[in-house]
Length: 374
Image (cartoon, rainbow, N blue to C red; front, side, top):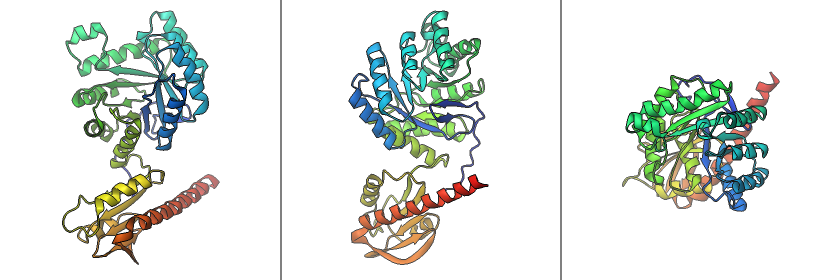
């Protein structure tokens, strides 16, 4: 039940995106990006609110034009989650969204023109306490770096990143994080490993353009899992050709699997076989949908038979071990006297999980109050 992760995080400096702490041991933030047209304010606000509902810590919004900057102003007024503005080349857009309250700028300093333009953006960011994310992508390296290396390599991505880092260092600005994303897992992982040794700032992780929902989730889990297991990474985005809400869910699932950060229910379920006494797959899928609003970290095991059921239930907050017609029910690792009818599991389990979540929430509040009072 919610064991502590053995992973030792890479030391880094601390920045804030809005009120979300990044780096220096802060919880790894999970973010996504809107895919609506930014100028469609209502659609973009609706998507941001949906992302916030499933746990997004930060949301990035593309701001390619002055019209979208004006729309950003209206969007920012209607949402609570911190917003990052994704900007390329036009420094005036960066200045405009800074005026409108952006929480972070995703902008590569070297791509926005002459020194005076770069300085104006950095000075504005400093004055308004707005951090910057340097975002290097294996598919859009500078031409001279492409010619030097011939193809994207870890050294090429890191050289590009350090080119932008050096600009901020020269301007005495240290409130930034960096990403070196690539669509190839090995390229991305090796790039982040190399960069992690060169700078102290937080790192934003991602396997860019990872693919569709299933393949992209697998690719991201492999790549980010390798880095996170080594303590590398302070924020992350799962880049899927899918609903952005799925990016948030997958991101938390990856963190949950490594015991780095828990949010919501960790369902432990068997892959099923002929021994199952109830429909495990249908039950788990239905409960996941019904209980998306539960953010309390808790383990719930749903095992279709008595071979592994009791063992998994003994290390879960709630557990079910399938039996003929009725299944054994466990709470806090102990078998209760109650047996649940296999024909009426969904409503019964949902009610019990919600009740347990309330108990755990109350317990956590008491513990927090005791800590604060001491």
